[in-house]
Length: 374
Image (tube, rainbow, N blue to C red; front, side, top):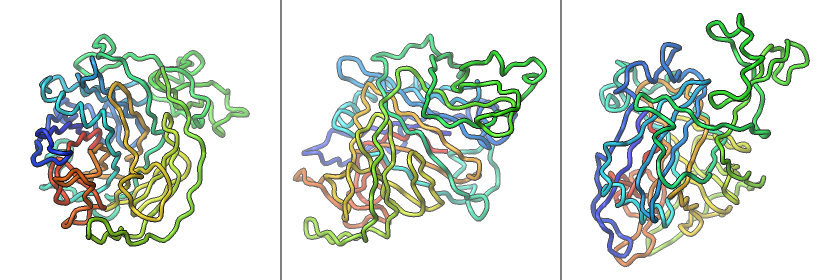
């Protein structure tokens, strides 16, 4: 699991000419037994886990970024303490203006993906059954503290945060670990480690035939729930902007409930959306929009203003193997030309219109914040 902010040189009329390709990254592989498939890891990727990223600000300037992974009472924190203050400050304008949320799923051979996941991964490739579906759900935007409070977590990654019940969350069966059953742990657990637990005695359980139910809690303060909306799926149309004809591939479209956002719609390829859950398949990509539309228009791209805020979600990577990368990231899309007009691009290399990032994938530069590459 890697998280990376990428800053850029000062733009002219919103047009970026160069960015930091490498970025200021932090990766769980640098902490033994922190993250991987199996119960020996603090975050077991064969089970769902939660991701929370705080963007701290002071006097309107980005001063810190912290990503917390949590799962059933365990946590690991990427604090980005090595990111220079001036480096983070360069991202302030893009975050204040709003950045587009992009979700993609790709991967290659073990040798080309070793930068991300070796160790613990070795010789696997992102193909066949190793490249199964991923699921993102419960995406939430809420307010963060102005400054990071280092008392809530230590450098080793343990977190102590205030969780409250989430009545919207779905109950599921909790499988006892260690001596939890022998010590009647479920009867007194309450809310712990990001989950609310309820002892049922095995009868009339809200989570089926199970002695201990659990459901996801939420960090206080929480965001408001986005209203339920629907989106019919019209055929994609041809749009001509600046004499460039752009025709997106056949799209999966639908309303995606994001708490703390008034309305949001997702459009992309190779996946499906239902309520607050997005299922995404290998070699797919999705962008969030403010409203339904028949064309991929720059004015409809949702711009998330996350300076001084939190974005969090639950992710299921149980079918996503080594050498695969589910990426959840922010970019200053739509890209702009030297006159400051939205630019769909002329050599997009399979990316959607108006795409840009800090590696100039698709031919256009812009700031990028990789919240998750996993």
